[in-house]
Amino acid sequence: MPSSWADVLLAWSIEPHVILPLLGLWLIYRMAVQRVNAAHPGNPVPRFRVWSWNLGLAVLVLALCSPIATYDTTLFSVHMVQHILLTLIAAPLLALGAPITLLLRVSSARTRQRLILPVLHSWPLRVISFPVVTWVLFAATMWASHFSGLYDAALDNEAIHIFEHALYLGVALLFWWPVVGADPSPWRLGHPARIGYLFLGMPQSSFLGLAIYSAPAVLYTHYATLQRSWGPTPLEDQQLAGVLMWVGGDAVFLIAMIAAVWVWLQAEEREGARLDRKLDRVKAASATTAPRRSTIQPVTEPTAEPIVEPPG
Image 1: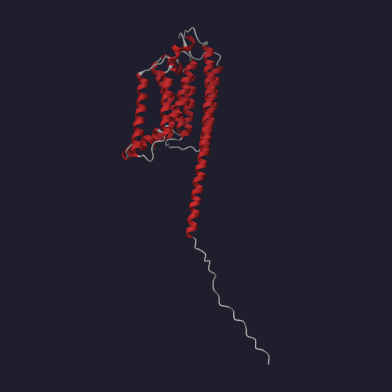
Image 2: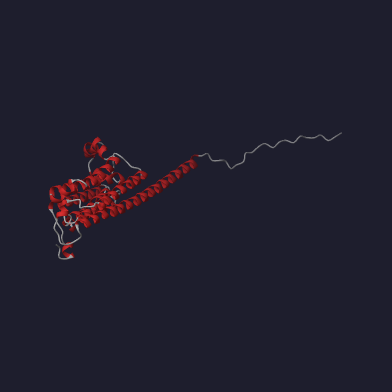
């Protein structure tokens, strides 16, 4: 039992198998950005891409190393916060970092042609990145993991817990890849389709939270049998977790839809400006090539008036 809030806030868990991969991803991305910026000073990596990647990694640190990770097997509500951070916050931020685009820019032409592009164009990636498949994978993983033995097993086995986190982050990255649209993909969603994709993602998240909240008994043996003398009862804790999934998921999807509409409007404005510039160029070209009309009036011979002979 924590003796004070200070004990809770200081309960960080810095584990090598978590922090070293995250540190490696940060260093590799940073080195790649530096190389691209040095080679292309006129077209550097956008700053907001770098900030998105760094913020995404920071959210992963918060989810996997902070007191959230320390108490995820003690309180279901804390565990739910962790999963929301992994799937709905960190994943879209990492996707906004456009790591595939950065990899293509930093690689040599030989590596791009022989390794990266063949993978991007391969049929397994085309199948797994199809938007319907990514949506179904994400939803099925969330429902199946929460209503199967996987969730309980992950609470009691560290290796399964690590696998669960990797699974959640992996399917979340696939889910956000087509809707963020920052990286090249075998499938490209139009702006209306992105909004529809997100709109359909909201109810499945809401219903999952509602199902957890409405469960009449504690769903997981681990939390039901855990002995602690503080905090909410296991059922109250489970209900709070359901509310967090319900309200938190809806909030994230709503923000994402608003952002998608704003991006669509910006794209339409840029396209309108491009068409205006194109029309102006066409008009200017027509004006320079059209024959000039002469301002000098043509000279015509005066018509001779008939001479009338005077009478007698």
